[in-house]
Image (cartoon, rainbow, N blue to C red; front, top):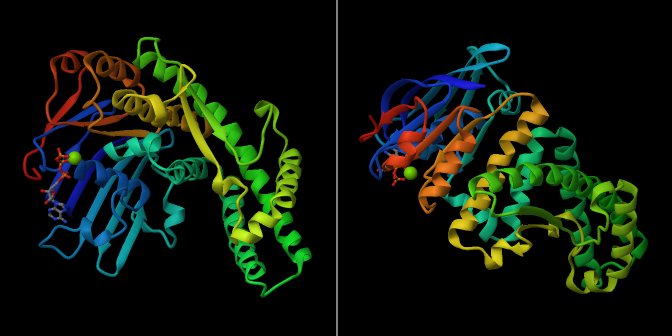
Length: 369
Ligand code: ATP
Ligand code: MG
């Protein structure tokens, strides 16, 4: 799919702007603080109805204005779709072909975007919570069943933790009730773990191919699911096995969990490990390696999404070239070129990149114009 046109009204530092994009490569060049990220953000909001960098929609409205609009024309296999987001003080409206959508969840998913921003380095360097959020957001987008199990898991987890607190404070004594919660939690938890492992195997395969390309076959990247339960033979994992393992662990750790008043085992405590040539990137990787890894994992989602939905998403790359040496920049551009519609921001296009990118459409951005 690709975005053909975008019209902005009072969005961030753009007052009125109308743009027509290339279905392949679009490069946004501008000095700092001119509106490059703002433009990517507008495309992101058009797809997801919310920003990637703030939860406060009001920040998206231009300082002097009360309302903001983003309108776009999306082209995909099925034809042309007009998308529209209206932001005002009271809330927001989302329209598909002029028709207002009662629920934002009906709107999301029409346009698929993948964004890589400098903050995404946290995927490698940040806490396990960042990686779990990544997994949940990404897999939730392509698998409704995953999202369902996750919601159920979170709700049972809350109840179980509340009960563990009561047991800890001796306000409750019934261990059979704890078993009931454990049983439910293990059932949803097992579904989540099995799906995560399967998705990650796929994502890992795609990410590894990209990492090889970007590093001229020098870096072998692997993604590993690091679970609080032991999962030997990760390839052919069965839901029932994981369910039994979780239950077994809850029994073994019962005293500890009551003592701490919280659930210590399960997908909410699991993590993801990145290995380059068998070494943990978080511990041993250089800045450039960590960035390349985060990038390869994000870009791998393009392939995963294509595999799962049959359509390529739109790729938004904010400042990805910085921190990568010339060779990595060149290889990165080669790896993404001509596959998907790409928007790439940069303060200045170096010569290598300029020569390499075939027929890009270049936008020079200066003070929101
Ligand atoms: P950099 O290269 O530093 O990342 P950039 O071109 O990506 O720069 P943006 O983040 O797109 O910069 O734009 C930043 C500018 O937008 C800032 O000068 C900021 O003051 C302005 N800005 C942000 N929000 C609003 C708003 N609601 N109304 C008007 N201007 C805004
Ligand atoms: Mg920026």
